[in-house]
Amino acid sequence: MSFLLDAQGIGITFGGLKAVQDLTVQLPAGVLYGLIGPNGAGKTTAFNLITGVYTPQTGSVKLAGQTINGLRPHQIAKAGLSRTFQNIRLFGELSVLENVMLGSHVRGTHRLLATLLRTPGFVAQEEAMKRRAMELLAIFDLARMADEQAKNLPYGDQRRLEICRALATEPKVLLLDEPAAGMNPSEKKSLSNTIREIRDRFGLAVLLIEHDMGLVMEICEQITVLDHGQVISVGTPKQVQADPKVIEAYLGVEGSGEPSGEVSHA
Image (cartoon, rainbow, N blue to C red; front, side, top):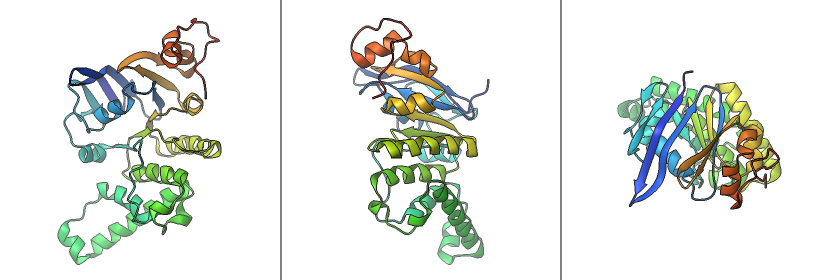
């Protein structure tokens, strides 16, 4: 099987602390993949290793067959891997539309002189980016808010806007870091439907970190579980839920190993 994202044996140590050890995550096209674990398990560090915030000290990361170890985050985004963050990182003073168009500029080809002179080619490219941004905003039911400052959006809409901006980079692989954080049940239900829709519409592979186990178990087809930087389980949602190591990591007690033992959806 060929993989869009192929992270093999990646790891990093901070001052003697092995934050992530020998992590392998492989995503074929179109998969919805979960990366879960208790607080401090190393999930966000793993995202940072994959997206170039940190350079892996061990292992390699390939995107569509291209090694991206050592590339800067903006180079990795241009190669086709985009992410959201645990803490929202929108430009609050800019409009909703402008935030999404910023993501589109990763694919821009105009130069400084063309920008200053506003050449016909520059204007045409900007109009194309605007149309693309509005199409994405419509998918997230945000088009009606296009001219609003991003900081004025409700929290759930800001979360969705951040995903929308990530999609504007035209990624092959999308990494979502706790996209449901702070959302109410209705917003979470809408989010799960939207994640499926963008996967189906754009043929993306999606890697998801999320504390809401109900959301993870509902939409993810494959899951890797981390604990203290180490992989303790890999499998389908049902397999992971019934794994005694996972039950112990989350509940602090040794699981029975029976299929009825499940990780809480709370």
